[in-house]
Length: 198
Image 1 (cartoon, rainbow, N blue to C red):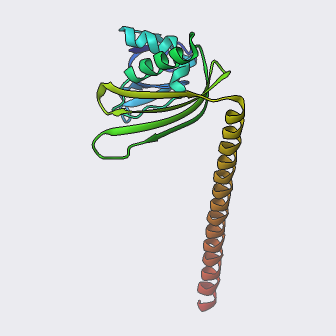
Image 2 (cartoon, rainbow, N blue to C red):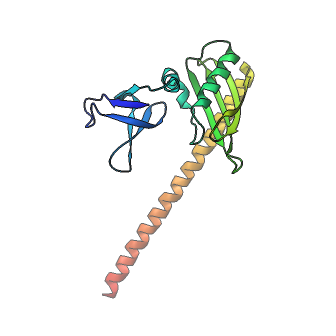
Image 3 (cartoon, one colour):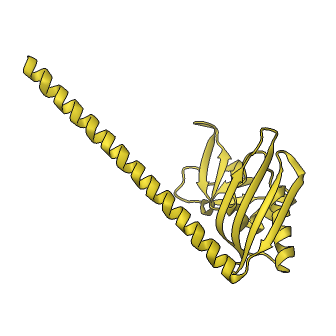
């Protein structure tokens, strides 16, 4: 896949680049300077497809909200879309992504994902999937539909987990602030001591 820069304020207006990675709202391209890569907003580019796989991703860009690591090819997205559409018995046109956890339990290239989402922003689904890096025929996708009570209970649980994470991070910020303050006071006292000895 390639992109053409269409943002009139960009120094790269009109240039084309090969796509390295694409996500829901950004694209990373091969760039001739710096570290060899540059990131653009999706709204600043025009996508140029080169195969059926490219067209699938662009037609279903919402699925890129779900992250896949290096080694898990974009064929996973097709398998996931097909599985969800079979479960909801209709076309998937958007997702409300609530949880997306990736694990690599072994060093042998096996991986697992747990996904909680609403298909078409209505139908709640819990998705467990696994596969093997660099193997497009290894995907195993299990989807369970949650009823209203299960879904609300799960959302409340996940919200409380997020609140705990926020509290932990706020506490960590306080520790950093304490470290900076104590270090700054130490510098001031050291400077005063130097002045007195002179």
